[in-house]
Amino acid sequence: MILKQAHYTPEFREHIDWIIEKLKKDSTDTCYLELDWFDEPTIIDIKMAEKIRRAIHQALYSQNDQ
Image 1 (cartoon, helix red, strand yellow):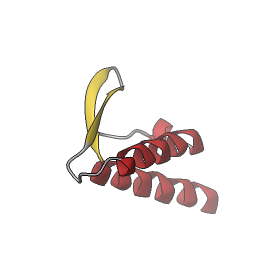
Image 2 (cartoon, one colour; image 1 turned 180 degrees about the vertical axis):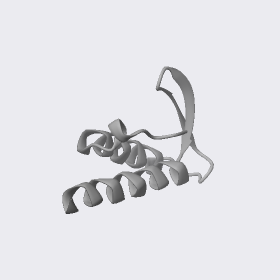
Image 3 (cartoon, one colour; image 1 turned 30 degrees about the vertical axis):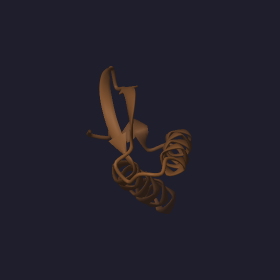
Image 4 (spheres, rainbow, N blue to C red; image 1 turned 90 degrees about the vertical axis):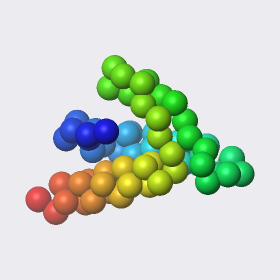
């Protein structure tokens, strides 16, 4: 999945936080969610969600520094 500049928003970060919380409620590390993102089905697991959250966090802070 490739994130575009439009995805680096507080709203999208909140959505990722929701996904992470939902995935943490499952008892296995292999759990995933199937989502329809960007007009295509996407499978996301906890590790991918955390990477996305870090990328969004870094982008938001770098935007604030400008």
